[in-house]
Length: 282
Image (cartoon, rainbow, N blue to C red; front, side, top):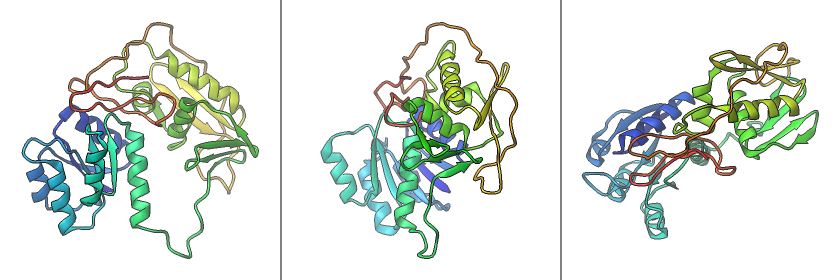
């Protein structure tokens, strides 16, 4: 899917672009309203900041809507109800207030695209994703079942599982995981990741194996795959042991100096900071 990102804050734009590309989106970034209105390349959705240096983003929204039905999602530090209402009335399909997480933006994009591209009448209903013969993940409801029984996961445990199961068998570095599930403004040891990995190993023992690759990161293997499996991956070996040492974690960082990416709205997700606000890991 092709995204036109209209954002004048370079750290925020770079973080958002990097996060979207990791999930398979093609992103074209422009930093002014004029560049957005003159951009002639193809795109499927627009992410539009309102605080642009050359013109008000609301005027850009109105102009884009006048000439195209392409979905527009406003991303702005303006959280006032009036701005949200005006943006929606001018043709925006959704409105996300800064600070926000990349995974939230992706969820909004997918929701908007489902509305503008409805499923064919004869298409089977979308169901939970199946991993092997024992594990299912319902991403719409954010629920996990093991052998038919729901597993209680903390918000960040779910976000971590959802991220690792997007590419079973792929080696994910600690930096990739921390940026996707927590926040890029993360300094010092990443012991919190090891704690959450250990919790998933304990709660989903036998269904998945999370291998630790020393000095790199983690790899999730789906155990007991069969022909009904919705994910790839062979049976794994023994669990890797949690690594890392204790230590303090700094959580501060400004939007203009760094960027953040994270997952769900609940459970203290990391955020992308607004133009003047601060962002940090939870």
